[in-house]
Image (cartoon, rainbow over all chains, first blue to last red; front, side, top):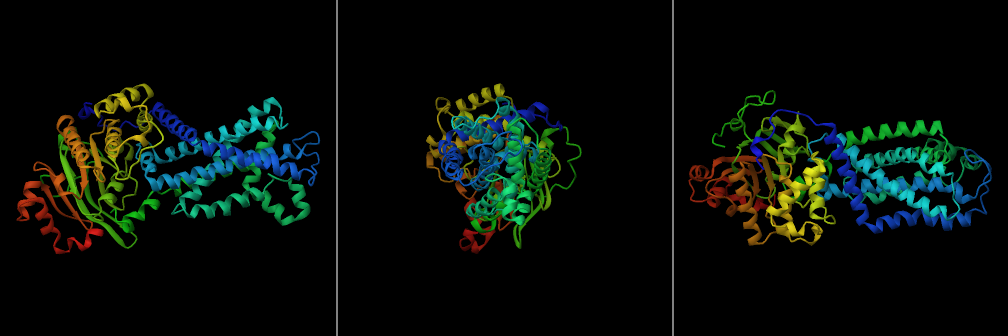
Length: 282
Length: 269
């Protein structure tokens, strides 16, 4: 440890150093995920409850006509599968940002932000790591769903991957944007109710939008404007090897906007500042 | 620390070639406010390489705020902070690369192993896997936790966790080490171990250390001392001189004299 001989001149960071940092953050997120078995199980149980119970009960009520990307009549279970995949990512995105609030309060976020690499890059890595975890959850769900007769074409498992990465990033950065505005952990439960449930129900996850339009034109517009709808549709089409260009454009734009917003809004002092004046830590 | 005058000359443009001439840490006219409350007021002092500088202050004096500014967790509102001449505000990457830090709250992943914690930190500094593994093994050996490398951090004692945090802070071979009240909550033996370990780093590796504390007995005769009270630097310099200037016999009395009679009621900060 001949520390005195260290670098004195600015040398920046090499591509290899960036990649080491990125893989390190993703690796740690994966390890943490594996250690939290309950989180994995609950992430799987939630969509499976919808699939096994809600969909089974609901399929008699709601008839599905043939709409793209489907080419035949489909079971209701098949219809809601992409919505449930997006739901996994929605919960995961919010949960990762929950953990960012928690990390910030617990001091783990300090470890990350003291890294000499640019802060925006560190936050991007964090988002990517959260998305990687959501991919594990979604594919585990797809595996179980396959035994439940949700059998998209084999190529669909591959073509859905980029769609999932994009939607995962969008929902993760939305979560980060929201978490940057949250001062305390307790406030998060409220945000879950005000963000997750409205986003999920006012979307095409559970019912095709033409049926919504029949019921309420206004709700239809809300659903159309909901980025989550487009995440669902992007995943739905990609699962059948197709691209929904409108949804792709919306999701890509939202991802960029949310991510830039989150990186700018993310202020570590927000969670810590309270302690300075009030907590007596100085 | 030998001179009380703040460093005024600009140094971020071209770091001086002679490392001994550049302070490990230079704090120059730094002020910080949380809304209306001023946490730091015109704070200036230096930490020299291969020196142990104690930052003495009660809870609420502004120590943690200062640490958050040095580590760029907070944006600097006014003043300048340099690490070996690299400005934390304008070139944070170069500055943070030379900095190791042990925060007051524990920042380890309790469910990960000792080695995994170290490897994660190495990755954050862009240190490749093989190099990182070698360094981690070497450091764990040095702090006497080599045989615990694979166990979860959760199973360590408080003193062992602190030692691991110090090892982690040294993994990227920084030349400046910040420790924010690192002995809080430790027993007597663990405290003594940590202090002697850090002093050894100063003596053997020439690391500059800034050690924040509110415990007088952690300060030794040969140290540099900065007394921070209610956000202001009341005294700075070698311990002996600070004591003499205050007309006191020991650090304890000097601190009481400097901060005045209201020390105890304000202790809660």
